[in-house]
Image 1: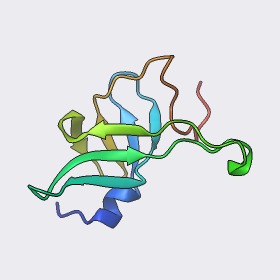
Image 2 (image 1 turned 60 degrees about the horizontal axis):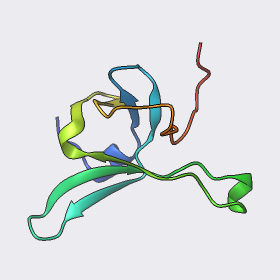
Image 3 (image 1 turned 30 degrees about the horizontal axis):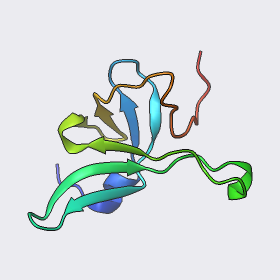
Image 4 (image 1 turned 90 degrees about the vertical axis):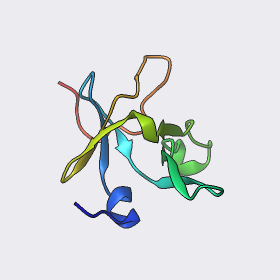
Length: 93
C-alpha cells in the first residue's frame, strides 16, 4: 500500500491497548539529516475557540506505530489519565 503525507494526515490514530481514539494526525516530523519520518504529531484541543490557548500536543514516535489501516493508524503509545487525549470525537460507552 502506497501512502502520501496527505493520506497519513487524514487518518485517525487509535491506541491499540485501550481502543480509544487519540486524535487525527495533523503533522509529520522529519529528521532533516536522514530524511526519515521521526514522529506523528496531533495538535492539542483548543480551549474556548483558541482564546485560552490549547492543550499540549501529542507526539507519537514512529517506532510506536503498529499498523496502517484504511481509515486508522494503530499505535502502541500508552495513554494515561494524567496525559489527556488530544481530541475526543466519539462518545465513550
